[in-house]
Amino acid sequence: MTRRQERVSELIRSVMSDILLREARDPRFGFLTVTEVKISADLRDATIFVSVLGEHEQAEDALRALKGATGYIRCELAKRAGLRVVPVLNFRLDPSAEHSARVLELLEKIRREEQTESATSGSGSESSETAE
Image (cartoon, rainbow, N blue to C red):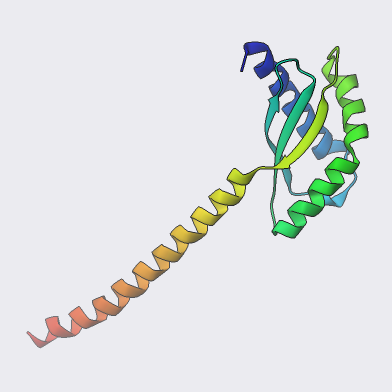
């Protein structure tokens, strides 16, 4: 990614976050975060990755709402970003957020299993120590 693409991507991410946080009236945007913006070399297409706190169904619902608000969002981007050409916006769910949540869930499960095992083996070792 060129330096210009990086600057435009960051600008879009920042403005998008501000629009969703301060102005979007849709309650489905409440737990939505813009995680990354990838922009084409000609700066005419932007893929915006978002994560949504909640169930997969809520994430899909928020994504549909975003797609429905694309015209409004592009208009706001044009006003605020000062870009000569406002890119076509494509919204995608960020799979890394879901993956991270799954990894954390698995780590927590392993931790609980280890605690259960140590509690079980710990109570057995205490009784053998008191017998000595």
